[in-house]
Image 1: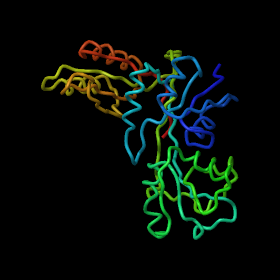
Image 2: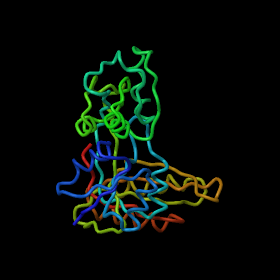
Image 3: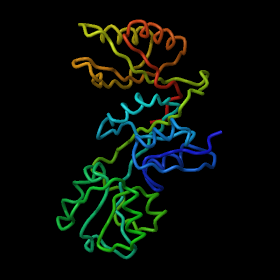
Image 4: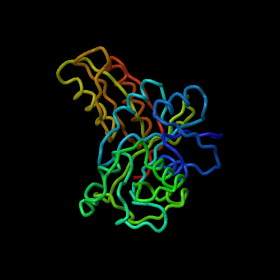
Length: 274
């Protein structure tokens, strides 16, 4: 039974929102300052599972988190797609004309930049976490400052939303994965998998692997490459595949495992709803 789940950030963050919506049972939340700290908590047994963002529909993949998955041998057991809404909030009674600064995570500021074209008097200040800025404003009763964060943060820290959903692109989805130390996933309900493989550096090697996936009726939903450390010019491929028939999947897995110079299963799990 899952009792403690780690997140990057604090209560009110988007990671916290995923925990609230993904899990059905009551559990203890473990707040981590960084994704490395989160991974170490999983590996050390400090928590049962962790939730980590992996890609955003606007900003793309979080490459450092792919490396963390690999480095710490984390196992993906599930995923969750969260529609990200950035809200401008401040202490109750404040108006946007009162604000001199707005603080938030650099990605949140970037995704809301167009909104602030109409408010050139406001200085945008980068910080480590969306919810953390909401907490600071609430705890220290900071006037003339706003934060960009999720609606959950405004509820937890008693802030007033001045403008909801201020992100430039309204359809803004982040994919989060649920990770743990060991694989306890039942093979009965899986229809998605994450792999990492390295191929010989020769013409057509990747095309051959992709043909195997196609021939085995796998749907390639994601492919990402990262350099192989200490081997210039060589790349590891991180892929996500979905499938209808597990027999097709296991056949492809077996074939590609033979073809690759290195092959690792990062997780086999039920796909989330987009």
